Amino acid sequence: MNSNFGRSGTRARPGPAVALGLVILCIEGYDLFILGVVGPSLLTHPGWDVTKSTLGLLGGLTALGMPLGSIAAGWAGDLHGRRLPMLVSLVWLSLSMLLSAVAGDFTLFAASRFLAGIGIGALIPLVTAYVSEAATPARHSLQVGTATAGLGVGGIITAVVGRVLLPQWDFHNLFFFGVIPLVLVPVVWRLVPAVVQDHPARVPLSAESNPPVPGVDGSSNRLGQLLSAQYRRATLLFWAATFAGLVIVYGAGTWLPTLLVNSGYDLGSSLDFSIAFNVGAVVGILGASLIADRGFLKIAAVVSFLLAAVAMITLSTPQPRPLLLVASGVAGFGALGTQALVNIFVAVSHPARLRGTALGFSLGVGRVGAIVGPGYLGAVTVLISSPKAGFYAFAVPALIGAILIGLLRPASTAIAQSDAPLAR
Image 1 (cartoon, rainbow, N blue to C red):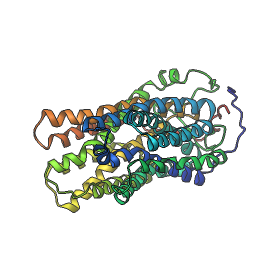
Image 2: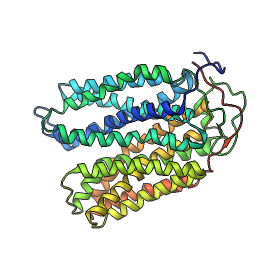
Image 3: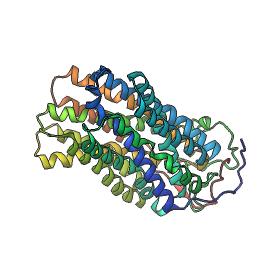
Image 4: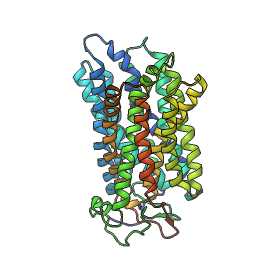
């Protein structure tokens, strides 16, 4: 490994970087939500004997792979630049989805979902860091948020594809669409620089408002730096806030439609809810990003957590269908949108030499929330008979997340020389 801190390499341009990030995360959103779409088909698949418990196991295996991918890819991105780890992650995810498509038994299918989870977890910190470093300073949050909105767009595509093709198609065929990332390999090779470079007009400072120590060796212990006195408080708060956010995201993905039905809503089909949820996430991310770019990133993140709590409490009481869909959209922003804003906060709070590692560990540790979320909501619904209990259970991590972000100091940037690029 070459730990050279020279200025070689071509800087990524904002437009192509945002477009590439949007496409990659759109495909990732498809891969992330596809299991929920094919769930009913899995339950009736002959010979596999899939139950609701084993379906939950598949979701758990996917979530279990995500922290491994997030931590490994974030670390590798800081050591070797974003290009190589992003290429490896794209190929890994594509081959994992191909394995899901051809799996002839439940064991192989379950293994493929674990492997897909590693790929899904790897791409989010890499794409966020890459777009962050290419983004125009004045439009940083909007450009990173636009790329991140790809997750919601992918969720919408998944719902529509599932409605059009199932049950006429065998569910295996929907996983073949997950091989599409392979066509992006030459695009990533061309557009993603081999060397990590920040925008020359923007050098992020720690969320604790301390400037990076000049001359820090890029090969030093990055996790140790995140836990040093300069970054420790912000690091731990980011980890905890990401945990709270992902409890909401994965708890909602698993339980929210069921909670709505149990509360007496006649949804007819989960398609309307899924589209409203993901449209709300996309619109909310873009709107909040515009606010964040005006110097209110911390406020936007706190408000997004609070909106998640408000949406869940609103859904706990009978509402007309139009208000139900609006509240579902707000819930989507409060879930996916909240996590997008936290990721942006992490990105702008660290220099390039630490950004991938910071995002990787924040998402990696936070992914425990993805594992805990469905079980937490399931336990609440079992232990408390009231149909409102599940909705209020969502509100708890949302309020905790708002408090945690509120404890952070606002992220800062300084006009100075560009942060040194990392190794090829």
